[in-house]
Amino acid sequence: MSPEAAWAGAERRAAARLARRVEELRGTNAYLSRTLAGVELLHTFQERLDIAATREELVGQLLKRAHQVRHSHIAAVLLVDEETYEFEVKGVSPRGSLGYVRAEVECQVEADVFGAMVSQRKPMVVATRSSQGPNVNVRSLILVPLIAGFQLLGALLVGVDMEQADVQQDTLRLLSIACKQFALTLRNQTLYNNLWKEKVNLEVARDDLATKVTELETTRDQLETSLRELKLKTAELEHFKAELEHKVAERTKELVAANKELDRLSSIDGLTGIFNRRHLDEALARENERIHRYDVQTAVLVCDLNGLKKINDEAGHLMGDMAIKEAAQLLKRTARRTDTVARFGGDEYVVLAPHTADAKGFVERIHRGLDDWNRQHGKQNFELSLSIGWAVADKETDLFAAMQQADDRMYKDKEAYYEARGGKPRDSAQHLQPPAS
Image 1 (spheres, rainbow, N blue to C red):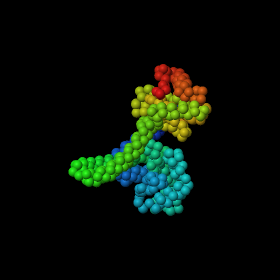
Image 2: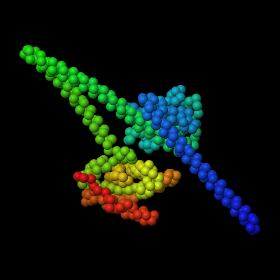
Image 3: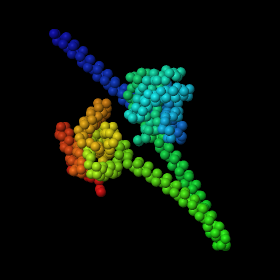
Image 4: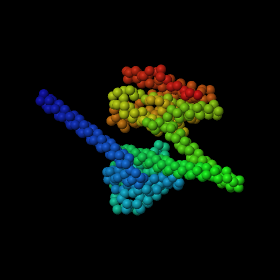
């Protein structure tokens, strides 16, 4: 081959590589543009939710957000009735599609689609089932659960003119975030309204009690004038006393219920959404007692996020918080419903798995979940990784001793992780300490 031909071939290959690189950069720029647009939509949506004064206004804002989905023709908000626990249509757009939406919901419920959505707690794309069609073309339905904490409030239904496979994951993710925003705002608004009504009722009761006290004082003065009036007013006083005791008993009962709700809220970690250290300490004490009483085995896993300082230094503390939250949610998704997943503090987590003698399978599922997360979120500025240690507590091995064993094994796993990458782990003397008795 002549030098001229070789040079021409090299130029063509370089031009091809340059063209591929340009296409990759264009794809990255398009992805970042879509992501930024999605964030701006979510920010605007949250601002509109914040100024909504009623439930109807909140529902209207969610319907408008749903219609921003490409090829969407129908949107409906379904809320769970607190008495019947059934889905009820609380808002639909356009209004003329109400009959179709009700028929479609009935068909999907019969097919247990809503049951699958509730159990999976994530968006679903399903085919339409109702024979009663609207005036617009709807080929697929997007169902997104409305979840606040651990409470299912309802679901968002979006009818789109596209096949199920054509619905993009970015669309589902943005809709899921918007639904979480809506659910949290709705729950907070409901709590605020309930507390406001309670405040008004208490103020009315206080005024009633003040009136009763005034009447009792007047009666006391009158009782001094006559023995006959004394007997009459004494009976009246007993009647007022009974009413007062009844009201106090009712208010006490309501106060106990409110305190229980506050205790439940205080057991959740604000950043990650999993149980906090306080709840973990109580669970450890209960589980340790159960192990020794019934002679059962319980596995305890101690997990620690790898490279948090590096994430904070290179990507920022917001990304560090995101890593802490994503790791916690991954552990929660991997665990069973009977397991306890809690944030021990900082970037450390503890998992209690009752009736488990071997946690190897659990650890393998966690690592698979981390691999899947890193593949799906390859555009992020960090790698999600956990160091894990586990041990089993039984009648012979105290749960807190097993927890210490798991902590030691976790630090060995962390040392191996950093040695493989030529780095050093943080001070391994910072071991977990059992809760104070």
